[in-house]
Amino acid sequence: MKIAKSSPADRKPAARAAGHAHDPDGGHHDSHAAGASRGASHAATPASQEEALALADAYCRERGEKLTPIRRKVLELLLASGRATKAYSLLDEMRAIHPGSAPPTVYRALDFLLSAGLVHRIESINAFTVCHDLTQCRHGVLVVCQQCGNVTELHQPALRAALVAQIEQAGYRLASDDIELKGVCASCQAAERAAEDSPPAKTVKTAKAEA
Image (cartoon, helix red, strand yellow):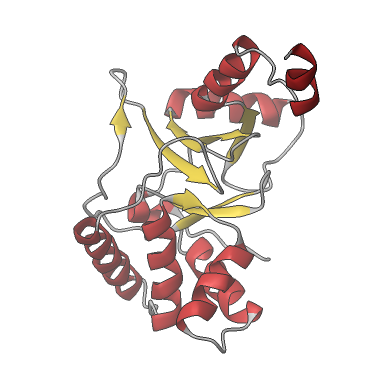
């Protein structure tokens, strides 16, 4: 899919959606979860969801664009899930609401939301997640758990600037605004440790032999 990102100058100041964890040095991070994550889901409450949709609708109007019913519904599904969600899962949810929904319908809506900067595409797991800064998305560094798909968005301008400078010095140009790092989240690390510490389960045959 082609993704055309708007410039920061095109974006008007607006209130941010809730759900940020701020660091003392001015940076902050947001967490998202994907698939059947063992981590907590960050689904928006009905009130905050409606507030975010109203914010997105006003922002689109300021840009001279429309948050059509289909685009709004896809954004609403992402907000409600609180997780990075694959396109086919969104399509399944859309078909539960509108049985005639076809793949191009969802992909066109996602293309629009991406171009408007309202959602991120998580390349490493091929999924989509709402940008929790919405109309003030600053394209931080995305840390993606390779086990459960949990995504944490790090907003550290100095870190990003230093990383981009090193990339450019090496002769490269970033292909997109988002930078992804692969990792294993705290929940999955804890699950790994618990699995290592627990004794192996006995098979029925072994249990009978011991009896």
